[in-house]
Image: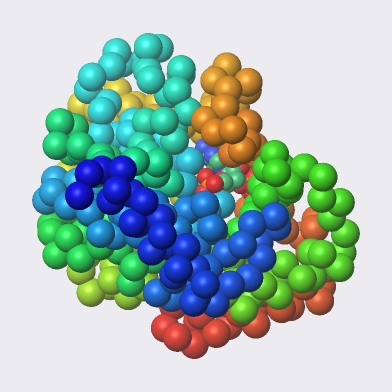
Length: 325
Ligand code: A3P
């Protein structure tokens, strides 16, 4: 098959598949339930392609997360930890000063396997360790990730702040700009979120999947929490660097390298970079909407007690299923 023909076939298959999949609406997009994962229509092709073609290497590092749980932050931290010796001590020339973290670690199903025109992207030239990210659930990962020795960093965030962050983010998307949100709409979306219908959801399955795997195999998956990282960034960075195989040396600790990385990757610092003030990674949004408040408990300002109760019930179910933070 020529590449174009293969691509046409794939697109036809996806169109046919879409007709048979359960679907819902997410703001302005259709969303499909594909093998237990809610996929925005424009990502479905990337997800299928990623699942079919990706071959993990033992040295790969993969960041996994749900949207709005700290992905941008972890991308900057992982990149900074792994590459720290390549840049001067004060990080003045650091790539994070001119590039958004999402340009330094790309998402497999959103960027790497998107619009490949039937070609599998050639990832063989990327020096190891290759750094990638994904929002797909543990269950939906390609087998090669599960079966190789590659490492997975998972970040989780409390469902209240995650929902509120999702809410703000999607309303800032270009195609959603005309939407006038009100409480009725927010209730509808809290209901969707709590019944598992949100991009790359269900939230509960996602968290539980990686949680269980991190308990089973601590060399494979490190489970981090946004709230813990905010509270004790340095302790978390040390743990993360060890897990990744890039532990901080005594000399580095003495030279304050951990703290310098924490500072470089802080929300305040990233917000100051020109690329994050006026840049765009996508036609759909400006980089600045990736960096909002970064507060724990911001949901208090937005969720009514009834809506908070609804999310609390979902969180209880999560705890009953064995999740404890
Ligand atoms: P808020 O909307 O609550 O402010 P993601 O990167 O997974 O899309 O998550 C986005 C959330 O993480 C947003 O939360 C954003 O402000 C916050 N965030 C982004 N970069 C951060 C950083 N460097 N430190 C702390 N929080 C950050």
